[in-house]
Amino acid sequence: MTKELLVAGVSFGLFVVCPRMAGMTHIMTKYSSASMVVTLLFGVVVSVPILLFMIFVFSKYGLWGALVVCVLTDLGAALLMKEISIHAGMETLIVSIFVIAGVKIAPVLSAAVVK
Image (cartoon, rainbow, N blue to C red):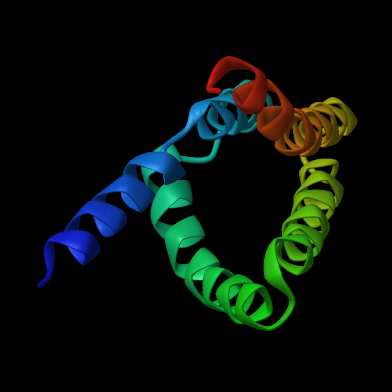
């Protein structure tokens, strides 16, 4: 294993566990009695093919193509979460909107800070 792969893989793993994930965990525990451990394990299994699809789209269409996939999965999550609670679905949608806004704002802010 190369140093680059090790750093990129560990960084990806750390990034997946992000503030957004904490927010989604909060929403799920607030509106559901499902076991978080079982939910996590099932979610990991479901997410692997979706992540592979997103990487495929990224390789063909770049960042914006991958973002389209991610936005669609966020909307899908919001639609599914509304089955638990309309509030859970709405909160999921709002978190998704902030993530999309962050993707647009982050390059501008980082360019202003790091010259």
